[in-house]
Length: 587
Ligand code: ASP
Image (tube, rainbow, N blue to C red; front, side):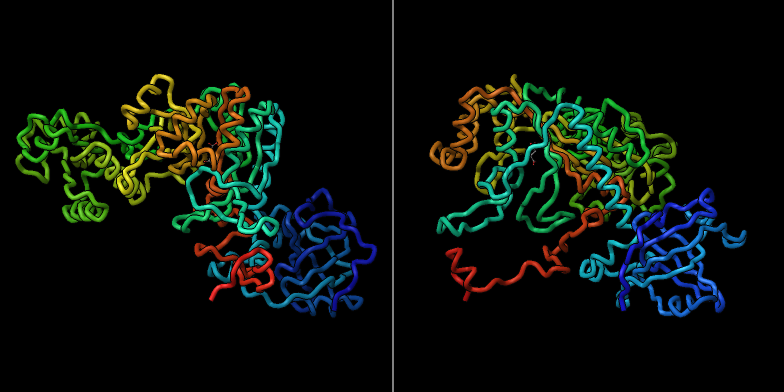
């Protein structure tokens, strides 16, 4: 039976009481976390969002009867006096651990069914059960901390942008198809039969129009929707810190985002150094085999082609002569690997699609899995790769990008296996000068690597028609620990160049008019140069919280299979609703 709260007011949260409060009267309101019934005395840990406080019920005035009824997760109020804990019960791990509340009155505000898993301990529970009972999962300390961190990060973001003259402006959720290139979520219109709104994949067009509208500096913490297959760690809806600035160059954007990252890192008590390293895309691919390199460890890939141009090893020599490369990296202390371990690496490489992984031991004399290589060749390769006597050099050959990408995967696998990543290391960088376009063999067309509003580098514009693959973009990604946490660009602000861009993408003038006509028209009314970025707040908070999945920092995430297990979405709707929306029931 539930008792009313009556006139009780909370005096302290369950995380507040300290030795200074000894002697004070207190009212705590919260959940029963743990109960220890020792006969004449019962200890109850009471929990709320702020922490846990021990309360003591001693045998007197009928309090015991109430104490005996308590079960974990009952909601209670306790009134009493703060006292120092006896020396043997002081708990140094708990912020409130020096004190306890000696109870004079208990109110059972609500009972609780036995939860399907314990809230008080962190023992593993299947993800399915966690998501079905998300409200209970959210009571556990892991998610309380994560959701609290997320709140602090979003507040830091809002404070920062406000202080820097950005206005938070909302943009429509019921919108028109946008150009990010994923599948849209469509919402049928009841009033306009056969027509649909699209949920925004991002507010890209709106934020650019806000610049045309003279809003100068915009930000928004905004939900974006992409109907993608749930590979990797994605959600159908996710949150971006969306930013756009007038009269911006890439440097202007970096200059705004870097101090923001410092503010965000303060929320976990870490300094973030600025300026953040900048690395052109080409270099990131060549040296790390990735456009989002993880720089928490070395293992940089070096180009060894010169060594093998005239070397005795025919396979490498021919690859280099044919325009390919030989590349490799040194595994620190890898020289201790046994023959079997090296075989293991080669097999792993094969699984990743890297057929010819070749290893070199420093010696003396240096030796390689390829026996025909001379000592001089090996010495040179080791030297260029920066391999020391304890290291093992791994090499591969083939087309430049593909070889680096495969070695890049090896690099990540080895870092993981060798524990080269310190758990509290953070490495940030900007990857800059992305290619503007990429060619898709399937349909023989060029696609935007970012989105079609991204501006080409001024010096590359002329190549748009003649050598599209060589055009670099004024686009940048922000990378943290090998994850892309943000991306953006300086935009095309000239209507003619924008039209040329659509043509380059094989979008006919009619189609461009149909899909983006309103935007092309807006561009003609005095558009300032502008640019921006969007940061993925789910991923940022997950990394700061030390979580590998963004589901751990979203209050109500969907499963990898796109289901809301708690509310049971998606779900069928009745045929009346369908008819109103001019949709035919299935089957
Ligand atoms: N709208 C882009 C995205 O969501 C980001 C940007 O260009 O600002 O990826």
